[in-house]
Every structure is written in C-alpha cells, then in structure tokens.
Image 1: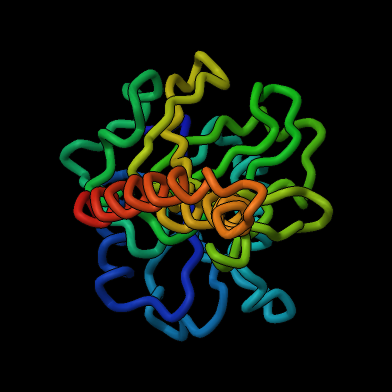
Image 2: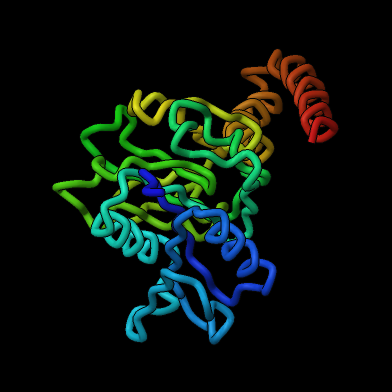
Length: 248
C-alpha cells in the first residue's frame, strides 16, 4: 500500500525498545525514515530506511530533521509525521491516511515529547513562529519548492530560550498545559501547538519590577500611603503563588 505519509525520527544512542518500536511500525506497513545522529551501531540492522552521514553526526535535532524533510520530499511523500525518539505510537489507533483531518494528538500514546522545534517564516502559515512537538503532521508542499534548510531552529534549553535570540529570531517558551489549536492548513486539520510559558517563572519576573517600585514608594515619606497598598499587594501575591504551586 502506498501511503501519503511517512514517520520520521532522529535517533541518538537508542535503546533496544526504541528500535523494536520502529520495527513494529514497519511490520505494520507504516513507512519509517530514521536519521542516525550517532552511535547507532548495529541495532538498526534490518530496518529499511536508515540514513547517516559520518561528517554530519551529533549535529542537533533541528539540522537532522531538515535532512529528513529533504529525504521524505525526494521519496514522494505528501506528509511527514514527526516522532520524538521516546514517543510510542499506538498501531491500533494509527491510520494517518484517514486521520489527516483529525487532531493528531489522538494518534499518539505519549504526545509530551522532549524534542521542540521552530517552524519559522513560511508563507502558508498564519503564525510566523510555531513550535512543533512529537506527534504532529507536516504537509511537505509547505516546504516546496522554496525549501529552506534552516527552517527548523532547535531550542536546546527552556530557561535559556526564554530570553534568547536564535539567529536573530526571538524564541519564547510556552506552557505544556495550554494546548492551542492552529488552523494553518485545512487539509491537515488541527495542529496541537504546545504553548510553553512557565507560569511561576513568568509571574515572578513580572512582579519583581512592580515590587521594586512599590517597595521604594512604601518607605518614602512622600508616598506614605503606599505602605497600605504594599501590604495588600504582598498578601494577594502570596495567595496567588500558593494556589499556582498547589495546582502544579
């Protein structure tokens, strides 16, 4: 059976369980394209599509997925389903050819992946910056004919990315718990875009600047009345902080 899609994944020092899972997908007639990002050894023996480049190893996930996008396009697939190495896809739920109009999160047993990438400045997307996680489908003609090998930008550290500029583009991290839906292309349906704003950290950063202003005013003779506001503000923030901690 000729599928419209293929599964793409990047492996680095995988376990035997990781390999067995991918071989199980192949055994169920699901095309899998693997990029060997180093140290696979012989564990992938028997898999159909394993690509590696001795001069292109340990390069980071963003660069490796760019390679996979190019390979998938050349093989004639219309879609790619990106899997993190640790994501286990349920074959029982898996029929991407029929499910292209459904939220892809329904197809994945574990949609909370560690890999995180940035789809940047593509004309067919209404959002210029979109983080994509494991378990999402991309339509390959989004990348063609103007395929940009720097389309994926890797975000390697959540805290660092809160204020970092990567190649001149602003990176923001959003909260895992807030799942938004992005209608970039009706043919692929809904995108589960995980917005990662760490609420406690962002809350603290916002309040530090306000606290400085209020604290200085509270101990100033000119603004003596501010000390009453300071007490109520402090009480409110303690309650808010505790409620956020308890929710987590």
